[in-house]
Image (cartoon, rainbow, N blue to C red; front, side, top):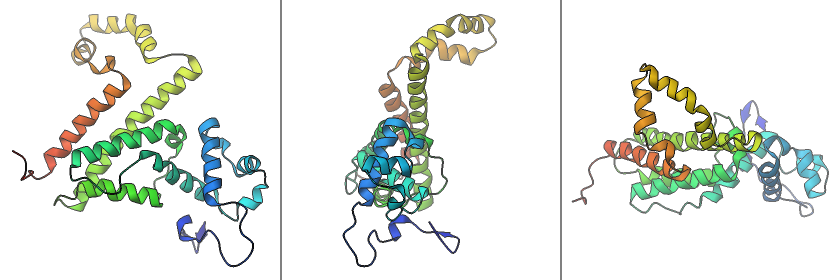
Length: 244
């Protein structure tokens, strides 16, 4: 919703305004219904009309609680972040804390694949998003500039999102065409051998012959890459005085 051309967060608008009978629904109930539909049928299916049918009411009545589609998407995106199961505050071990953030975020995206279809440049500043921000940024509150913290967290979340988008893309490939990564590699075998025999691609040859990553499970690949990202973050941080 807008006010004078400026976006107003759905969380800045009281859910119940003025006097009157108790509302028949709530934002939480509408949001949970929308998430259930999106999980089962995709994001586009979670229209106000479809949500209203799920709740047994008319679509127009829901706009009293959620004024716009953007507001609904904000509520949905923020609500599913509960699935990340992030603690209330950092533990003091930044590496362990950022591992929790990465694994929790990956779990949310894998459970709610429609999140990958949300391409919005602005941040969603709901309570669960802010809780995640406080935890992740607080984990790196070790005496470095806040801009450095921002870049490092962006690097971490960028890695997680890239991996998950690839995993979801393969999931769709399997569902639509029945082609797994292993089957794709087998089908590509003859062409790959042609490339190797040409001798024109020495780095590609090293990837095919020496790399272990393509033969790891999805979880192993994620953890291997995550450790490398955390190593890069460690190189930027000041030495830990408690370290031996």
